[in-house]
Length: 262
Image 1 (cartoon, one colour):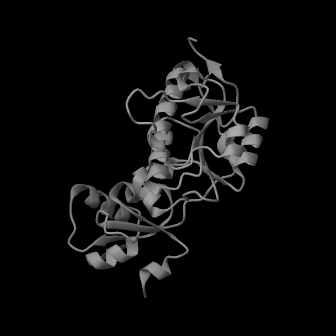
Image 2: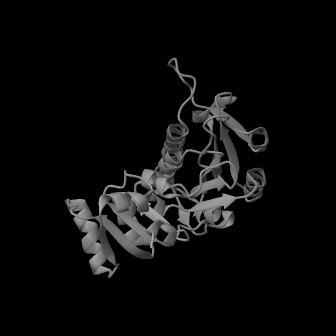
Image 3: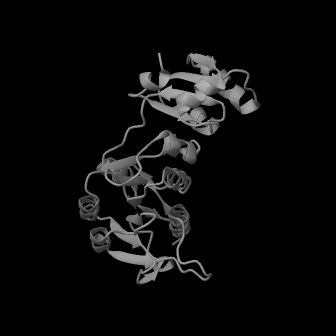
């Protein structure tokens, strides 16, 4: 049987880091490696599979290419349960003060994966994506996130503007980022519960999303370029938030914010 058809209802992940984290974090049906492949990192995955009694298969490169849907799989693929989206309220409320990344139509899986990885590294509450005209969770996103997808909390919403209104009602400030922003990103107060709204690669923030923001800010550019990649811009803003929150102890899953040395 063609494994690519067999796995249509499951998630097929590829790449050393993505497979390694999946083996540790979610149910894995089997791991498939290229015949004759070696290396320390691959061997660690194979050893972990044997320890967890996860079935292993070894196949020729062309079969692995077909299963992964790409030749850039680093000789290993995991067939596992799909990464599930969470409810917006759960993602927004599990850390206090909230720090969300909201993506308005980011379509490139590489950008989404990079943003997921940075959001996890910066300790953000999670990522919110829209159902329409946007990248969803996929093997390419998992590969770009290099394992961080397993640790991310991600909500997918039908109506992004409605979601922003809901977040406002929960006391979360909505900060939008675009070149035409009226203030610098450095002037925002990230110690407040906040959602950072980043626009799509081509259009930036859509009009209704822009109007739903409490404040809109820009990242100053000093060179001849007139814009930044959305994943780069997200990282810049997240780490400014992290800098400002250096004296704030976060309460996970409810409670009051405690400030220390502010």
